[in-house]
Every structure is written in C-alpha cells, then in structure tokens.
Amino acid sequence: MTFLSLLSNKKLLKAVADSGYTDPTPIQQQAIPAILAGSDIMAGAQTGTGKTAAFALPLLSKLDDNNYQIKKIRVLVLTPTRELAQQVYKSFEDYGNYTHIKMAIAYGGVSIKPQVKQINSGAEVLVATPGRLLDHIENGSVSLQDLQCLVFDEADRMLDMGFQAEINNILKHSPKKRQTLLFSATFDDAIIKLSKTLLNNPKMIEVSERNAAAAEVEQVIYTVDADRKRELTSHLIGKRNWRQVLIFTRTKQTADILAKEMCKDGIKAASIHGDKSQGARNKALAEFKEGKTRALVATDVAARGLDIVDLQYVINFELPHIAEDYIHRIGRTGRAGKTGLAISLMSPGEEWLLEAVEKVLDSKVPQESLAGYELDLTKKPNSNSFEIKKEDDSWSRKKKKYADNSKGRRPRR
Image (cartoon, rainbow, N blue to C red; front, side, top):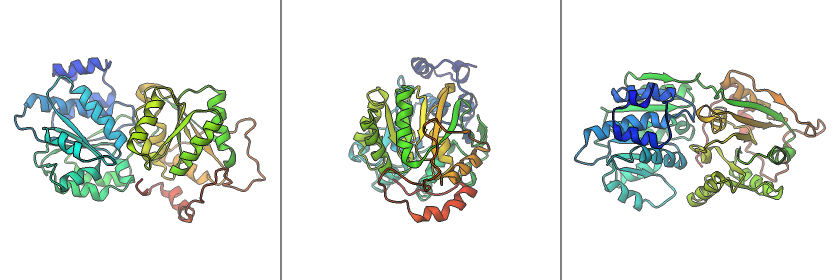
C-alpha cells in the first residue's frame, strides 16, 4: 500500500514526499480511510507509529478539498502537554505546507496575546492544551461553534493528569454533531468510559496488543542499591559510550539533582520538568537533539510528546508510580520500527512498582545485576544518596492499591 492509494490530494502527497516517507504505517493504513469517510475512531497505538500523520493528513485533505471561504476553527486537536502540542502543530504545518490552510497553537506558560492574534488570523486548525483552550474560550478569542472534528491525542495521559473536568467543559462548547477521534497508547477502564461519552459508533483500530510495550524495545531491570543508582547510570553511559540517553525520574527535584551530579561525573546532562520555563525546556531539548548534551533527565509530564529521532536508550532512574507511564516512557525509543533499549533501575523496597508494571504488560521484565553493582544486603531498603525529602507517606499507604490496580491520578505539574 502507498500514500497515493490512500490520498488523492496532490499537495499533501508532495508534502509527504518532502518528509521522506514512502510507505504508510499500519495505523495510517487503517485510520486515513476511516477518517476520510467521516467515521469516529478509537485508536490504540504506541508512540512512534506515525499516529499524528494518521489523523493530520486526512483532516487536512478534507479541509483543503472543501476550500472554505469563511475561516473558522474546524479541527481541534487536544494534547496533554505543551511539548506534544508543539510536535503536533509542526506536523500539521509540514503536511499542510502546500495548502492555504492556517493553523494555530495554544498552550500555557507563555503570553496569550500572540496566540489570540494567530487564531484571529483565520486559523482552521487549532492544536491546544485543555487549560489554555478554556482560557481562550472564556475570553472570547476561540469559538468552537463551527467545529467539525475533535481529536484527543494521548487521551490516557489527559486523564492521568486530571483533565477530566476540563474535557467536560470543552465538550459543552463543542457541537454535538461532529467527528471525534480518540488516540491512546493504553486502554483502561477510564479510557473506555470516556470513549462512550465522546464517540458515536466508532471504528476500533489497534495496531499493537493493548497496553503492550513496543516489540522493538529490549527491556531489562538492573537491581542496584538506591544510593548507587546515579553511579550506575553514569557508568552505563560512559562505559558503553552512549551519546544520547533519555532518563526518567518521578520528581522535579530528583531530575535537577541527578543532572547536576552526572555533570560532575563528566556526563553532560540537563533536566526538564514543569517548573522550568518553556524557553529553558526548548533550549535543553534542542541541545540534546543536537548532541551538545548526552543525557536529558525528565519527569513524565515534561517528556510527554517529545519526538527525538533515532533515540536508542531510555533509563528509568526510578520506576513510575503509575504503571501505564512505563509504556509511555520506553515508547520514546524503538520508534517507527527501529530498535531501542530500555533499562530500569530497581532498589530494594521498589518491587511493588515492578509488579504493577508487569501486570499492565502482562509479562515479566528480565532482571539482572551488573558486576560491581550487586546489592548490599546489609543496607536498609530505600537508602538514597540524594538529600531529597522523603516521599509522602500516602504513597506507602497506597502501595498495595497501585500494585493491585496500577491506576491513579497525578497532581498537575
């Protein structure tokens, strides 16, 4: 199958060729015809499968073919984070390069005035985060009365971040008669429940096993004492000469401290999280992509939507409290059919986190210990070399709940 067999719009086909794509991915093969036919869809696909093009191309085709005289917002793409919004927006710009369709982007953390100006210039496609979109709706700079298609990208993350109320509010301002597309890397009860309120007789599309990690990603757990995690992380990167590694931590404070300590080890590292300004996050990501920084230490929220070409290595410095996040984390590598390696560091006392992850994966992750970094059985569990305030005791009380149910809500960051 080729893009020519899926799309008739020559302008979009030219843009696809410019992007270097030759053959459509499985999600594109299934989603593009369904979206062009006007169906609602519920699609399960890992990151790196080409899902943005799967909805951007057919939606741009429909807009371009109709050539509307009055420029109003007709396509709204909701994303959970600024980074993902920027990535999706750029994709729409690239694919729509030879059309006259105007796009706009709206997210928090920056001035709202330039966004208002961009929207008022006649944007037909708006990519936005839920909170900032509601700001625009409330001040009258955005109207959704002409909306024809509403896209939820990474809907599972929106729910994890507590955006249910914002979603409900946005729906109140949206036409009931519309096309709705829901994309999610994982399907749990909350996503199924949300889909029933959003979708009308949807076409189900699953290009990988539900809640499964990408097959191209090799996974391994290294058992190590907590106070030697940083040492082992730097050892792996330095000894194996890895030039580009994405590292995940659970908290902003740990991300900052780890990046600083790794720099002392001779590994140039930077951190990104919700407390950093958008400019600082953009700079850190740009330097990482350019190879000026070898290690990028990120929290889950900050890393959501990051698109790093040819990233081979991901390290979970700490396993996530929400098991589904593990799939999103390791999905940063092994993208578009390429191979990747995901290493997770686990210390005594953290076994419950691994149990929750393995329950979501429905498979075991191999465990190893590296020579020179074997566990010291005389140490107490959760000893940590970083002087970080002890985590809220509520997590201890919730351990059994998360191990059994691996669901939860994270406070916004």
